[in-house]
Amino acid sequence: MSTSEPGNPIKQDERKGKPRSYNWGDMMFNYGMFPQTWEDPSITSEETGCKGDGDPLDAVEIGTRQMQTGEVAEVKVLGVLAMIDDGETDWKVLTIRTSDPMAAKLNDVEDLEREMPGAIHSLREWLRVYKVVDGKPENTFALDERCMPRDYAVKVLQETHELWAGKYGHGI
Image 1 (cartoon, rainbow, N blue to C red):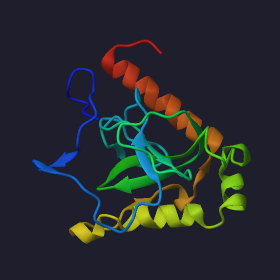
Image 2: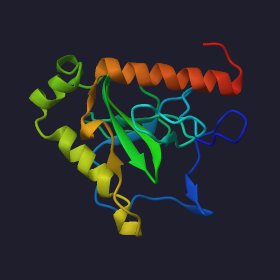
Image 3: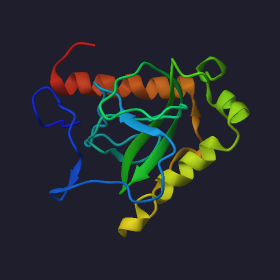
């Protein structure tokens, strides 16, 4: 999503004028974002000790179907990882589409561990190393690398929505 253009259109992400792509293995999840959220680069997070990355919150959708680019879906929030990328806070909110067959069984990170053992560990490790192939260092994780529960994730969503509303002058 282009945060610098009117209407915030969905666009190919670019780095240094070239299209950004993921070069590390297959992505085992759908990767998107939460509109009307913002990780403020002028605010240092108490939880991570780092400033925000200036982007909307990332959504990591773990469902059983690959989504299309630009697809919008209703999701259930399950938990959140506090990733540190290049010294910036880059929250990863774990979700599942409400229409997914597994959605009825998943409401929090404990359910995810019970129903899909090892999924959180695998997601975290993919996120840790996916930029190494491009010559960048491994990402790290705050909060003792734990995937925080649903209520914590909802708090992060609310805080970043309020930051977005303050930046863009919109009411909540």
